[in-house]
Image 1: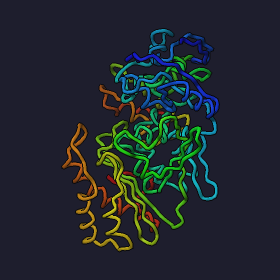
Image 2: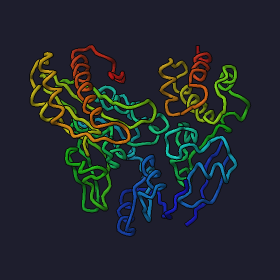
Image 3: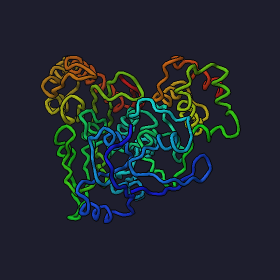
Image 4: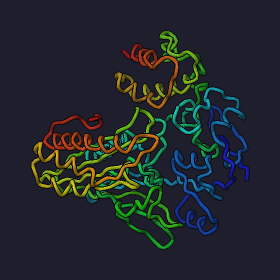
Length: 295
Length: 151
């Protein structure tokens, strides 16, 4: 399919150049991996008059850990996250999630920052960044902003990013307490499918939990009621049943082409139970290896 | 707004004038005469348009041609410049393809896999080709061919 809308293409060499283009052009679009952007250009969802390619900005390719803060630059692809020793060792749920994103050919190109900028309800990055309490770092001519991930997702496909602002990367404080986690993704087949429901869990050594669901509301949602119920508790079968009941209060799934509301709700409960069990087993040194699907 | 770009295509430096809205897949097929990448779903789902950029498989239907300036692009034609590769021989031996529409993408995906991981297990092979849809042979003979080659 050809792109009908015509635009200028500029591959920038520094951020100042980006800001200059922001003031010169009315309707700019930032291009990193392009796996969403080029699709949106084809369908006409995006009709920019300039496409600003940031792949030449080497400083956006960093994955680094310093002063206990992880930095993931806006140019980092899912394949690079999977290959990173830092991610594998300290943030295994990010690696586990990244392996479920589409297929190798997409992951070689698609970036995590692009994923949260597209901000579709079924974003796989969203729930994981939510349980790690990530911050989104943006830049404009006015300076930088640090936006907590809960405030980042505003609505379906809407973020807190201002016009004339660009995302530089994502920062995450290394959790102080020992912890383990799990990412569970329900989909129809491997290789390309978007999530029908997804779920990220972190379980800490003091048995506090962070739980976030995706694809069951306009934005990723923290399951606060469930967290309050099970925090600092031993999850005996009766408590697990109560937690599963609370799923109905924490999420608001809809029926669409990928699944019905009823199926999503039912499976969210199954996923919660299996995800919690896997996270707790991993916390205690056992459980399935990261990257093994529990569903 | 057309721009002249230059890039390495199958080992050869090529220069071509493109407009920013031209898709890499269409430029490769319609203007540079390379027919191995094919248009299937045209939205990144099916893998038939796979090419390699800087030795990684990508979806040429989701890339602007202008993005590959100064990059290294390899298509199936480039992989087999010196004849069939051992991997292709193994696909032939196992009758892995019928219509062949998915073959270029599958060959590139498995070539990338073997470059990174010379002895993949069955699960790793399945994961590597999970983004390449095949409607003829049901994947088994494709996977068998790779297993046979690396055993």
